[in-house]
Image (cartoon, rainbow over all chains, first blue to last red; front, top):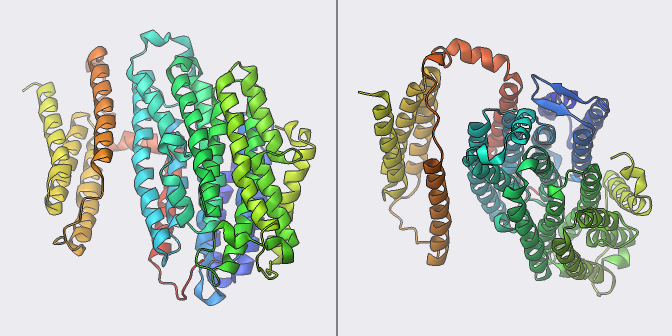
Length: 465
Length: 171
């Protein structure tokens, strides 16, 4: 709980630090801030409490989600090599400050106990993301992405708000625990029927943020247009936070309205899997492929949303962690390669610019391949166990057909993830040795090692969740 | 006149002016209709006994934000004809989706008995500034403070996007 206060103060002090310190120092200080806030988050462990007039709830699940979010933010900051070309022309303090603030929003979204807090958290996260998406000011694609994200995002916020209003009208409460009690104690037939519309509208509003299939049209353009470092931020933090909020609402308080949302949710999940995976096959750009892959991973996660078992919560946490580690590495290598190629080829983010990476950069090639293997779900990587836990959980609840489809689709996934590995190892190309800063290299290896360790000893983390 | 008649009149007016916002060809007219819509909504706040919200709504939305809107529209070149960007299929799909939602909402309103107003039990002081302040600084302290972070992010973002940075590439 103290983490949100600390992060807000850190964000403000970051802005002041920007006056005096060079870029390198501010990056290190931001990393330190995130470590401190992670420690503060951990200090709430096993204290299941309500804070601030019952609006903010800390449970071990919410703490785990907050930790994954802050870990992702930590790696994004570590990978933020340069905001600009040299010290004179850049203002990195603002970027770091906005990142810290958006982490506050994300933490609110995983530990709210009041609809208003959910809404404010979502807005803090979204507004920060609109700004960061458009921060490459001279790039037309970035501007287009920001406008697109902003318009679509604020439109769906309207859906979420309308849903919250209808649920409030039906239950006369904003408090999650109150709504849960009211919904479980009264028969659904005696509730006003606009309650069901409200529930579906809230689900739609959040599914937009996790970019599930009928609401995914913004994702490829926005992910491609945004600077890669912020695409990394979006595809890990925004996704985890929105999914945590969705899971908490759907499996928690709306659990008794199972019949209302179960069909739409499974339909959306299957559609997301098909659209995400099939479209990813046709992409030439690695960045766009990763955008579609993030859509398909949302599909796997939505499969689990209807379960109330404790084991499901831990599967989701495990999946989020493994997905975060792998995605962060993939984008980090993409940053290095596309930066190297930007002066040499026309489209530096295509698969073709990865060709021959292994020859002079064996380390980068290895990290990239391991992250691709993990995203594809190959054994001995974290991604395999993530998928395994989710599929076995869903299967044990007798949901057969969506799981079969998901397994088929993850086989499709192997195709496009291996396209990257083939480009790196088997294709001939000329890439000289790419200079990697020390901090960047350390973070890269930390994530890769994390992926492998989680793949070999999944119980290491699974026992904590 | 009955209070509910005023409500019906106001609602019809609100819907009409909101429709005119999206239907009028001239953007300046759109903005003026939008101002009118905000005034109608403020009148609704008065009916709901929320005078402070009414005042804030007029000052912030009808005042500040609409002036900004007008400025932006004046800066655009309105003479230029912007070609229709959406295909008729997209338009059709949009109309079908929106129409379905409208039908569902109307069906729900007709199906449910709208609860009667509270009448005498209603506390007439609810929407007053003093009570609002007590709620904001008491029960709703956390969201109230969080909104300040939201505005701060928006402010920093505006400065960040507006600031001129030398050099060719920012990333």
